[in-house]
Length: 141
Image 1 (cartoon, one colour):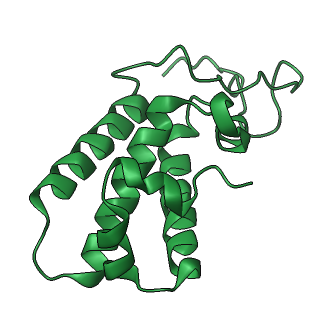
Image 2 (cartoon, one colour):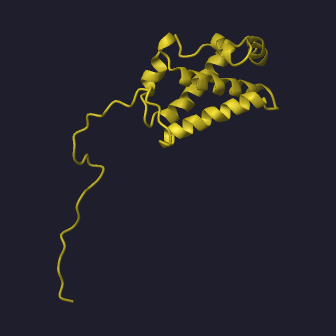
Image 3 (cartoon, rainbow, N blue to C red):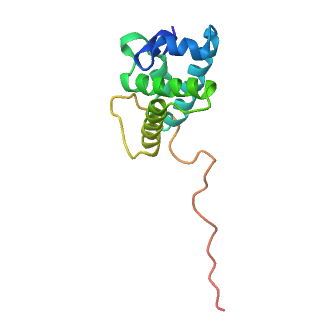
């Protein structure tokens, strides 16, 4: 099962409007959902375990992430079909993006999201950074 399916979008828009905007093409909605999850992953992956977040199913899904994902998907559906923006969809999209940016920048934290698991890299230099410097020589000049 996927993290979000088309019928669950009914909490943020009526299904008749969604069907009218997308037609019978169910794959289109799946593509928009996948693209939106990818967008959210880019923002959330700095501090949170996105594999665990988006692998959850049913009641195990994080409600805020699910709500923000729905807002982004509905906005993308409207943007794809109409030239005029839906004011409500645009407002909710902007709120979702602001939330993601605040989480990414560390300005806001959500302790209910799973953090990135600690890495098991050995301590010390890993070859990427060299510490220290050249030997200093004294001069009489």
